[in-house]
Length: 171
Image (cartoon, rainbow, N blue to C red):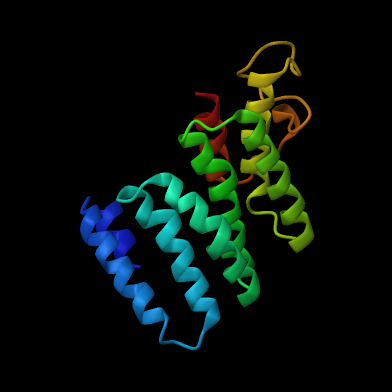
């Protein structure tokens, strides 16, 4: 998506949003629901948050993108919309941690239902960090991600991105 490239690489976020809007208009004319779902997901997860209010993206990701992706059989896009609308953006927006933990539980349940596990480790890390902040489940050390959702010592970090996520959450 050129919208994503314009924003993330060139820092031209308004131009990126314009490209994304054009892509969405073009998608309306296509028959492929899969491509429409992917384009919606990329637009509302990676492009619009830079130029539109974040809470607008949360609502649209929940009410439109997730549902359309599920209907199209685009589980990866649906899961990205679910994680972003229930966990990532609410954290950035400073929403209630208990509600975000509930969002983590929803992501875990849905991921297991669809047998897609790409987002589980990241979600478990976030959930354990929330538990560390809201209850004393790990001996009162909020940096150690060990408790009900995750035990970092027994968790295999199989990819570099897993290690980056763990270090980011702990910082």
